Image: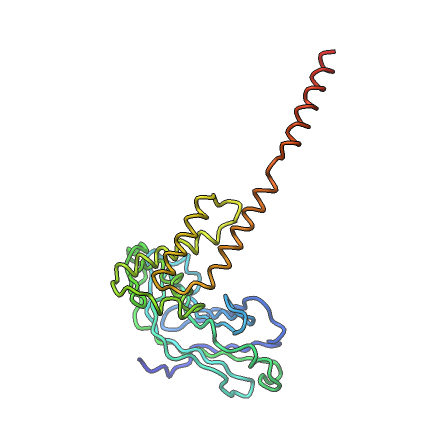
Amino acid sequence: MEKLSEKAFSWEIDNFSERNGVIRSDPFTSGGCEWLLCIHPKGNLVDDHLSLFLHAVNPVSLLPGWRRRASYRLVLLNQSGKELRRTAGERRFFCAEAEGWGSQRMLPLTKLQEEGFLEDNKLTIEVYINVLKVVAEGNLTGNEMVDFRGFHVLNRQAVSVSNIFVLHPDVAVDIRSGIKEVKTAYMNILLGLVETLDKAPHSLSETELTNAESELSELEEAGFKLDWLKPKLEEVSLKRKQAASSHRVSPFECIDFLVKRFFLSCFSEH
């Protein structure tokens, strides 16, 4: 790992314990590239840790196929400069499909709540960056394959797969197949299942829910630990049934409608 001796940016946040939602720093330049920091004081996809990420600035405005390879380290300090937490030096590819990297679990929220942990309720963040390679444009389509923990997935899927492992580190520890192609097929099923369950329940058909149940069962048989996904499937199924029943017309309502229509037609004839 390259030495990260040069500090690229320092950011002080006041009244930190009162902050909610994502906070973004001002843009800064390092290695000829523009960056910004995003911090989630109450967590991002987790609710028990502070989350912190380094992002490329305005990625949608960059030329198609842009990418940059950089080593970075994120450091948290109190007002006196005492180091509270730091990430290990990471080397990552930043691109349109993964324009930000960092830590979902940078610091436990219980630490921030300890008496005297933050001086004057201020938090300082320092970032150290060493840009290794910059490609302003290219012909990346997102269909390039990358290896992620033994799963051969599309480049555009890398962030989704990474998020699953961050939130559920043991999701694939017991997977029974060591064949890369089989593991990849299972991962594609899991990604599709997660995508299905993220849809509005009323938009799903009965067939889609039945397929989702079969896929979850198949993945569990293959060794995936999906206790975190089962409640989601049950919740979606229940909401869909409730939505369907609320729109169902009873036979008595149909009879009442026909009777009213009959009498209206009789009066209109006279």
